[in-house]
Image (cartoon, rainbow, N blue to C red; front, side):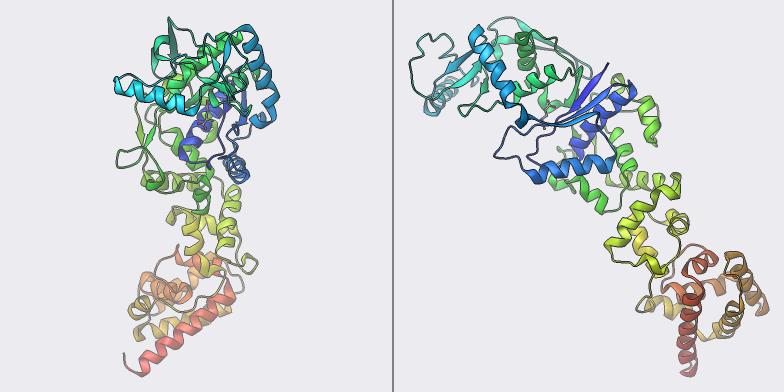
Length: 470
Ligand code: GLU
């Protein structure tokens, strides 16, 4: 049974990089019918916050990446870390280190002066006298010789010399575990088979593998993901835009599109760009992860978002659309069926935020017609056809797009003008803008009462201009 885990530290919110890691872990578990575990790494109690935990959980829920186990919290497992640390202390796999901060600083300075790599020099490694009452930390006795070979699923074979690694602290003076130690105890206890994470952790891996050996447990398989770059070629960061994954929801993106976008940052399957979640699960596999870093592109994300808006059944998009309408305080009780609006507008919007703004006039009145559009379209020459249209639309019993369309056709042919010549002034009249879906559908969505009333108002504007011979 394959078991993967996503192990965010709540020292920050969920961002694109961490979501990509979570996605790869989740997809691999799904692909192999394994299990996906969510573990909150909150040992750094000073920098971890409840708000960040909530942001992470909320983000994961919105993205639909449900876990099979979790969320598990490292702060609930302190007794377990203590237990292993004590075991190691007794069996000589770990030792007490009494070096003070000043001593460590001095050690580092001396090493720097000699041009050596800075590292703990093993000062307390062989101490036998433990009568000191000084505060101490526990350090892991890393092997002094030999090498650690990481058979990374993305990077291939990476070799580390033990002589390059120092004895890392596993328990701090206050009895809290350090990251590298807690991760190993957890991955072992939780029977994690595959650790998939960012390649900023690759240097931790040999130390962790040595600790798996100390536990007498086989190390999991590792896959270190290449980083994501911004469009300027530097590591993706706050400077490149939205940092909190929830900002993408606020901007009207849908989770499937975001996940589709992220899966392609570092993974590919032929030339395919658009993937449903089911396809991702079916096709995702570790050997197809690229070694090189990939660059973030906002334009491609927008394009994919629209692709998903177009290919997903409108019924299942309603909640995303409603979220955006609520945000701009549109009262949807006074308007058309949301499914119909989505079907009509998705060809012309890349996000639901754009869609909500673009279709607002279907739900509520607008303050004024765009002056440029009014000037161009609401001209005296169109007065007679508009009046005729006003009458025939008012008389319609059935407000269907077919009936509306034939009213417009009839009025246009009665006055010998083509349909566009009448359609555009009508559009300006009922939407206040010069862009909307096809005019019959637009009128249908706006509804009869509102359409007639707006048409009447536009006719008054045209009459005003006619009187002034404008
Ligand atoms: N908690 C670590 C982080 O947020 C991840 C640790 C891991 O995946 O091993 O970077």
